[in-house]
Image 1 (cartoon, one colour):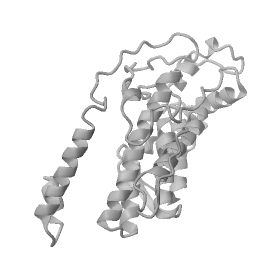
Image 2 (spheres, one colour; image 1 turned 60 degrees about the vertical axis):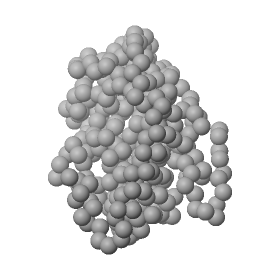
Image 3 (tube, rainbow, N blue to C red; image 1 turned 90 degrees about the vertical axis):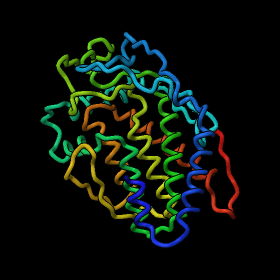
Length: 311
């Protein structure tokens, strides 16, 4: 139905040839990715028991997802661990202590420290983050009146980057297997850090926590990468646009730059109580590394040669 409605909006031109080309390209992509590992059975996961190790999270205790994703063949990266970050901060470090107390205060379901706007932000960005960045790209493409070819290149860059960012952050998540804030806060009396105080009844703003390890944060990775791709494509970070939310209907958020949207999406995970700030700062670095690699090496204008960076 949507396909037919989309075709009906196209006036003039040889639709039959266009459909044939599109189908050919789609079949070749499917053939190319037929053995990429994405349809493999998820690997069994045994939750940890030591302080800092990921455990399934209360109150619903969902099993970890995408455990096999680090082994999926990337679209652009040389290997999944190409930009793997260093380990998360030690539980007794100042970095961890500050991040722990921040998310404990701001991310609690009934937090008196979180403002009304922060609560809205924490809820607003609670959907699949890749959908937000595709919406932002679509809004920017329409505002800049891109041609069909320009739009195709934009979304190919953005979504190839998103696909590989997911592989990259899942590689890091399942390498380090770091616990989520809800586990850390409820079990803080086991972390040997006298500056973290346990609260066995603590739950995050959305109650349930995403079903994967905490480090690095997916929203941070993909938002930093999305903003970097759009900035590089349009040659400017300045772009006024609104964003809608699939989980908070009727609410729009206004931004004047891609970076501002990325920063709010990233901070939303602290307000939601599902990530430490240290998950997010490292996630932003990882996202920018993936985005820079894609921008420097793939779908370049014809007059440019690849500048592959493998480190």
